[in-house]
Image (cartoon, rainbow, N blue to C red; front, top):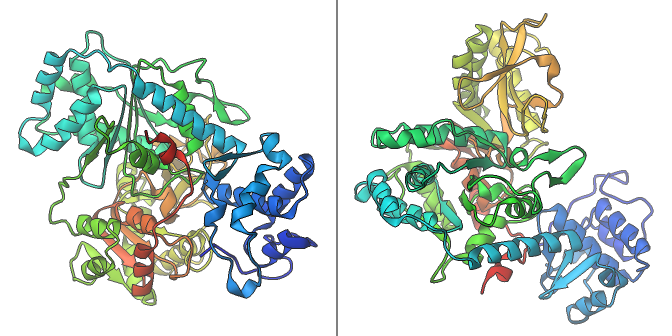
Length: 584
C-alpha cells in the first residue's frame, strides 16, 4: 500500500490551499503532501513544464526523497487507495512522457534503467558507484604477508576467532572492505585486532581515522575499541597500536563548512591524510554522506566500512549498507565479509533478533511469551507494568544527579531507555517524556519540574561545533555546577564525561524517552520498546530489530501481538538503484 495521511481539517499543514487538478486531488486524498506538490509546481514553472502526468511524477520523486528513497520506479508505484477514486496514468506511457519533458533535458530529472531520480541523488549515487569501482579495480595494497600472518595468528588465536580472522585477513589485503554482522558477532573485536595487525605489518605507523555518523556512535566506537584492546586475550604487545585512537563524527572528519550542508573541506581535490579510514554504524550513512566520504579518501588508503545491514537505514535518503551488501556480496572476489557466529549463544535477545531478522513471526512471539527474564512482553494497556519498567532507573538517575555524583549519574543514564517509533502522539517521545516526569513528580511528592532540573536526561538535536556536541549526544543535568543555578550538564563521551555550562546549550530536549532512529549507535543495559498500532507506517521489521538490539541484558516490548506481527511482516523498502549499478 502507498503511504497516505488523513487530513485533520481544511487547515492541515499537509494540504495545499486552493490547489486544483490532479495534484490537488492527490493532495486532498492524502497521497501527496503540500511540500511535494508545491516543489513540483515550482520546478515545473522554472522548467516550463505544465503537463499533469509529468508534474505528478515529479511530485512522487520529491515525496520519495522526503521518505528516504533515492528514486522512483513508475511501473511499480503502489495502487492508489480505492476510496480515492483516483488512478495513476498508464504505466506503459508514463515514463515515456516524462522522458520528453524539458525537465529531463535540463537535468532536473534523470532517468536511468527505468528509474526516475532528482538530479542530486542520481549524481551522488553515480559518484559512489564510480568511486567504488575505481577502488575495487586497482591492484591489492602491498602487504608484508609473513608479518601480517604472524600478527593475525597472535591476535586471532584459537578456533573461537576463525571467522573473525578470515574477515580481518581479507580486509587487510584490500583497499576497500565491508564487514557486516548482527549483534554479538564481534565486529568491534574484529576491527580492533585488524587495526593492530595492520600496524604490526607496517614499517611506519599508519595514520588511522575512526568515524561514525553520530557523536553518540563515535563515543561508543572509541570505548568499544578501548575495551577490545583491554580484553584478557588481547596480546599485550599489540595494545600500544590502539592507544589514543578516538573516533569522530563523519562530518567532523570531513571538515564542515559554515552554511554548507552537503559539502566539506575534504573532497576529491583535498583528500583526507589518513592511511586507514574506518566507519562504524555504516547503516546510518546516507547516499549523500557516502558520496562525500568516498571521494575524500585517498585511492591508496584503506577504507573499512562496518555495520549491520538489517538495522534501520539513514534518516536521510539511501540504504547504502544494504545496497553495498546486495551489490558487492556473493562474487568470487567480494569485498564483503559477513560475521554470523554470535557470542551470545543461548541469549534470548540474540534469538529474538534472529527471529525478527528472518521474518519469523511465530518464533518471535514464542520468545516474547516464553517467560524468559531477558525478553519481556508488556501489554500497552497495563500502565502499572510500564511504569514499573521505566521509573526505577529514572528515579535512580535523578537521585544520583541531585547528589552531584557524576560517574553514578552517567552510569544510570546508560542503564535504561524507553524507545518509541513516533516523535509525537500517544505513542511518541514527547508524550512519554511528559508521562515519565509526571510519575517522578508523583513519587517525589513534588508539583513541578523547572525547565532544567538535576536528573534531567538530555539529547542534543543539532551539531554545535563550538561545544563539540553532536546531534544525538546524550547527557544529564547535574547538581553542583558553577552556574548561579547550581546546575551543569554532563555529556557522555566514552570516558568520564564532559561538563558543559547549561547556559551554553541551545538545542537540547529531555530524553527519558527517545526515538528508535536516534538510539542507533547506542547501547543500554535494558531497553523498553513501545510499538505503535499495527497500521502505523513507521512500524517495520528494521525498526523492531534495531530497537531490541540496543539492549545488552534485557528488553521489554510494550506492544500487542498484532503490532509485533505487523512489524516483523513489514520490511522497510527504499527505492534505490545503487545495488543494481554496482553488480557486474
